[in-house]
Length: 452
Image: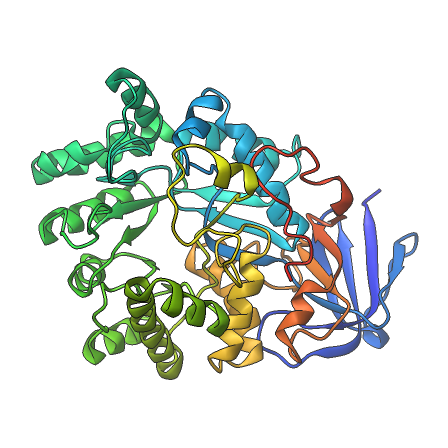
């Protein structure tokens, strides 16, 4: 007999853009949505388990287009967890699920451990947000290199290289010295060696964030090689020119296109992005956070103001924007590790934008402040992400045939952004998640609670 559950009497906001359906019923059969609509017109199969959600709101499971499940923020963390980085991924994935993210996309991390974690969650052996990942940012070295610790580290070279190799898998900075044909072959080899779900390459560097790494011809070859293997492509860009090159190379998604080195995106390039319907993985920050940054760190604040200008242009012109946080597991233990790079991750930071488990709430608040339509915010946090990553056949809306990923809220998400925090239940694969059991063993992350 099929496992059938009927969720009744809630207001359904299905993510398609259609108007909310009051007093709705969603029928879930063996983990898939088999019916959804007004209670009066959706029959409940005999023997179904019936859950009364009167006064609640049913929305699609939320998605984040850019997270980092393995927190590589301190060198001693990398050493302590060497050989078991998947444990960090499990912790972060549990925190994400606990606060309504049923699917996330990891855009930089160690491929081997992430395969282990991804597959364990996909098969139900471990709890956590479903995730897909890119592995290394092709063209950058690993987390113990100067690409990420700009002042360098004093560890033995063999130790640094051993850990960096877990990320690089033959596609570190040496990639930029190869011929175009060799670069294409290296990308193909990387996909075969790792089993990554999509590709991310560095159009610009990560040390100064001002240098271009690959020629336009090389970028087109990276994209072509990944596409030949059935993988979507995005790039790390930090300047107007690197963004333009990524667009012209044929990338499928634009990673943090709002970050342009303190120079606004020219209007013709914004228009081209909008015309091509290229998904913009834009990292919105709240007004409160931007005000703090402008006061505490004026140089960063000035750059952030330009990013905000870019994001407002995307919204005004109707770009396809995706909820994107760059979030990772953050807590007191991370901050207090020797070697931690001080910066924006301090106790005094209001609306901390990159704490996994709460960052998506901050993004939603910031989108609201920038005048995005409430329904578009919901879609940017669900179906738009699924479509951008080629996953909309299965995820992103509460409609028949889709996987039953839902969040049950106690307040109307179209009325106020804080209502996304009022989670009654999280449902993944048709099963109500025991949120109290998630991320109970502390490794690195603080539990953000209700993300106040």
